[in-house]
Length: 295
Image (cartoon, rainbow, N blue to C red):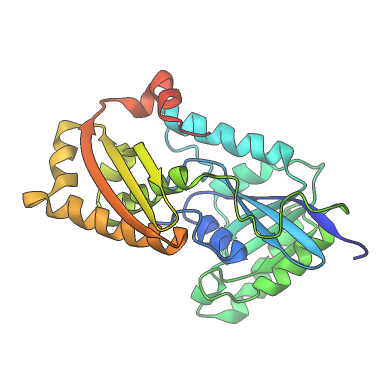
């Protein structure tokens, strides 16, 4: 590798392969929310890692899926396809040791115009390590890839090797962002995402999939953020679940979200939350546009 390199790296994959955990580990900040449920990521999230010889512009994407056919899923899938078309390098994330039909559908979308690195995540979960090599050899034969890098986003295993591999494939050029810039997303956007993260982490069944968060007001000083947020749910019955007995669940959601915000923003946060019903928003394109889904 000669000269400084800079470019965008799209992290794509099916739901629950650990894209957002990997994204956060590579950027070094909790910018993309995580939860063990599909459709947690609903936006294109950009994160910058600046090194002496390279600047990595990572793009986290929603999990591409064919299981659901509602308007929300169609919007999220279009986000993935748009990011793929614009990226300098593709990081295709799969679960180490297995590929599914959903993985293969994503492989068919990967543009040939950009270098493609398969990132085999969660290698820490493989109990029989000797089974990994035959799987890696099989994947190398089946798919048109420039390299395969086994990693564990959770433990940090092999992330240095992944960064070297990605940097070698970035185009030469000047840095696109200042050295201290982490993302192009505002604190207002990140605040809404951190509330939504708690909805996905604390609620069961289908409830979190029908939720979305809007920031009604965001006032900022050097030492304080005062934030008013509305949580929209898809059904009347879900409103009671989010609020909980005596408001206990909503209080816990707010408390944990506030702590995450304070850590990320480096300031105290006064967070107030409300819950309202917006029926059928996940299957109404106009509602999705109004709520900013996929932007």
